[in-house]
Length: 95
Image (cartoon, rainbow, N blue to C red; front, side):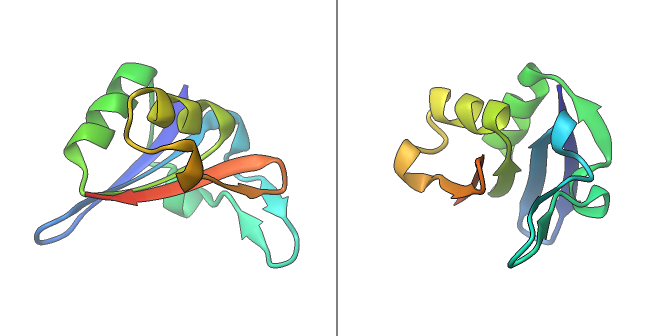
């Protein structure tokens, strides 16, 4: 399961998706990176909905081992697109 929030703008759909267990956790202290509920949590979604949102969006911000692996597996990103924040993978993509 994942946490997700969508942001609709004039010509864009931005999605922020994180692994559910990361919500609210600080994954790096300096510089600080916290998986903020205000950015990543509007609702809980499953894998199928996560894939649909990544298909539909124009911009995605994803954090967590499960969601990043899913995005790689579905060819939204490649391993080269992933950065590590501590031991947590993070990626963004724009279509």
